[in-house]
Length: 249
Ligand code: SF4
Image 1 (spheres, rainbow, N blue to C red):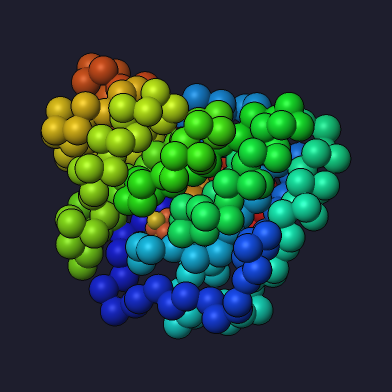
Image 2 (cartoon, rainbow, N blue to C red; image 1 turned 180 degrees about the vertical axis):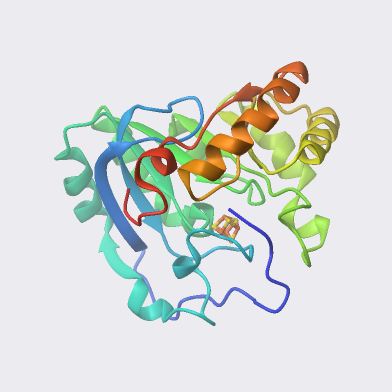
């Protein structure tokens, strides 16, 4: 999560995929879902490569930033069968698919999500809310955790790129989405209030920006009362409190 880097553009990975393959940055767990309604639940994570946004303080730039990372080396081609075998062998009932922006690969993602659900697992997809989900994905996923990027994160990026009203409305109407905002100031809460009103977003969770336990704890204390007053749910970033910004936790 973070600010948009004005001089940086996402560069798609050059690897060509078959229809039953996904480009994966990492898969890890068991750990816990660190944010949102399922906070604290044991889960495994599948992190996909590529993103359609370019947030400067993104905590997973190795999924999309070709200026700083060798994306062809960061991404690993995984067959959907291999991902299913790995996830269903884990002692958890929740799989979180994240990125990057997972919906960049959503055409191939449908079969993975359906396979996980058929195996009795719950599946959450983390998304920035700018790409409309395919109908097949919408009906199979347990929940989308939609995290639109606020202007404080969007330095240098036009509003029209980070906020897609029609897409947000689609998620809101689906009954399968929660909206989760990273907040660094009270002004962010006012911007969320406007977005919520404009696009009928509900339910809304807010969480503090921060990559250390100290940052997260301090900001959480600052935003807690104003967030509750505005009718928002509150979540922390549990994985940051426990493991800082360690990769793969
Ligand atoms: S949308 Fe998320 S993954 Fe993509 S650049 Fe922004 S913070 Fe990173």
